[in-house]
Structures are given as structure tokens and as C-alpha cells.
Image (tube, rainbow, N blue to C red; front, side, top):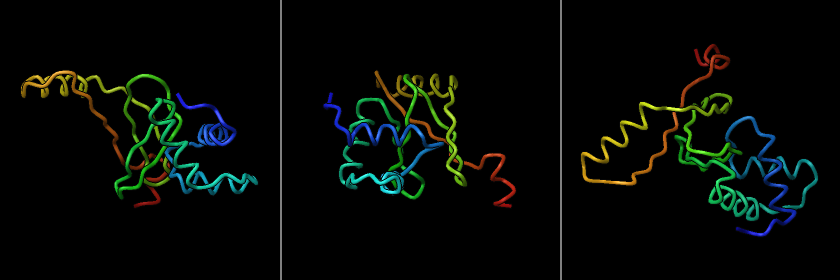
Length: 129
């Protein structure tokens, strides 16, 4: 576990205020907007550490950008709005069973998976037509 510095705490705190997933660049911009002197490389490093330690979720957007959000503990999946970035944690028992079955069918054990479903929330659907 990494030591807790003011920079890391600033990133953790700022991430906790976000409604959905956010890029390191956007989080850095938010921090700078509040007067923080934290560097972009430090934000990237802190986000990576938080994700490794399970304090943040990370995923790649459909465009390939790394995005982060504060997360709950335990295995879960996400519904993510392409419009506003809203992220909803979901359980997916059918996916869990499917992953175990497919892994076993091919001789795999202790298989892990990540499921993130991108779409438009009800507030954004009218905006996209």
C-alpha cells in the first residue's frame, strides 16, 4: 500500500465528487480549478494506485481513453451513459454464471472478467434522437 500524501488524498477526494467515470485530464483540470498545484503526472500515478488497490474502478472508453471513478467494494459491473457519463453499478448474475461455464468448457479455472455496458441514460436519449 502506498503512503497517503496530500496529492493522493486530493485525487481520492476529487474522484469521490464525480458523478461517473472521469479521465485523468478532466480530474486534473477540476483540481487546478480549485487552486491545487498538483501535476498531471501525479494525478495519473495516484489514479493508477487507487485502481490497483481497489479504491477506484478503471475502464477504457469506447474511444480507448482510461477513465476512473470511486467505487464500492466487491465485484460489480457498470452501465455507463455515453452522453453524460453517469455510471450505475449493477450485478449481473447471468454474466457471472456464463463466464464460469465458458471458462470451464475451455479448461480454465479462476477466470476473471470485466463487464461495462455503454449506452444512453433516459435523460440523454432525447438529446441523441
